[in-house]
Image (tube, rainbow, N blue to C red):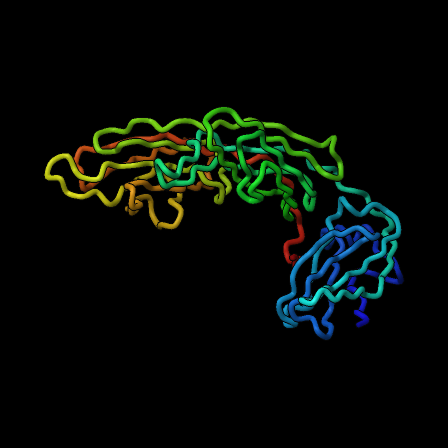
Length: 330
């Protein structure tokens, strides 16, 4: 089956100008509506290199657009096409579209950088049924393909291995999380796959649980998250099963936080968090303001138990905010 050519609406007489690229924050490339599009796997190519892959579950998903970032578009000729593979592994290739990029001054590259939280406990699910994580945010050029590697025994959640590729989003950011079965320092290294000299290395630490006050058996927490409203500083804890006075069961922990800190999944600065069957709990905190947050943990069913924790949200690294926000992306 012949496939129609991709949509490249910025082409004018075979040319895409630097002004057009700047106004659209890249080159917009679309997969058009075509017959038999249901359940097809799409690969999009520029100059015979795959730049995006995605699945079309329903023909109504088309047209679907992707934006090739400005820093990947030096002046010159480009050929764009796509392939579609159906559930029976039948594959077809589209007609090709060629254009010439002219008068485009490449943007100054965004230096690669990274923020990591630190202090989360090592994973030991047989001892406590929580999943401690240190979390990372990569900063760099929008659209850059970044390879992240962590030293063993640490594992990156998103890949289930010690290596993971991240495609930075339109603001030049990418998120990941790391766990380890052992305590100690872990090295996290990242580099741009298209420019390996652009790289960054940081360290994070997995620590131990501390003994809590009164009926709070143990606690641990991570710190150092960027104040971006999405990256967690987390608290992990375990309470004793019953109160110290009447032997009443303890089945929730109350947390109160300072300022405008967000308790993920709850509204307000106080929340009652149900305990797991082994009396454990995870509490995730977010913030849009860099600050030291005081979190107060209490067990209302065991009067007298008060534990205060100070965790820090840091200033997000300066990231160039791109002007075009109405891009239809994959």
